[in-house]
Length: 187
Image (cartoon, rainbow, N blue to C red; front, side, top):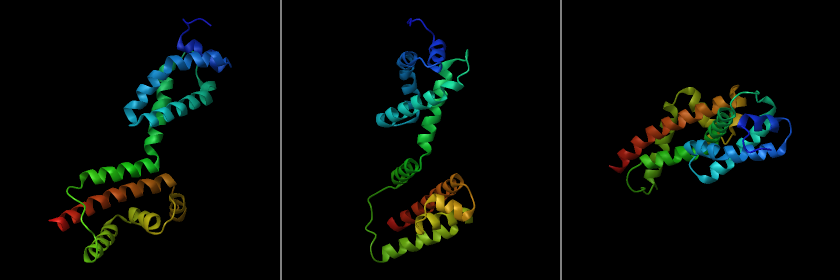
């Protein structure tokens, strides 16, 4: 197999079952995939994982490649979708929300004990009650009731993604309200 084959020719050969064509294709596109994923993902470990997922998705979608279509935009679109999927993962969103919230909180951590602890509990309850009903119910069931998002969605008759969106919006509103409460307690 000549080294002068275009990405498109390599992709066609790979789609037809030529394993060596994929090895050559992979060698020519991996750096571009990595560069695209680095724009979205923070750690090199996340990029490494996302490269593997991207290559797997290319493998699974190889039969859908349209002969003559440019390969690189197709591949990089798959990589961007993998990055977006990674960013949407619930655990990652919660880590980022927690980090974002902590970054906005100035000063030392107060010692929340006794009457201060009771004041915090009341502030959280009040803030939850002030949320829109849709977010409030999701948060009650998920965080306070211990239900999974799938269980919350089923109980409310909505899709799990919709439950996650409602929870995310509710948590952001709670964080905003509780940051104001915390600031008044520290002053």
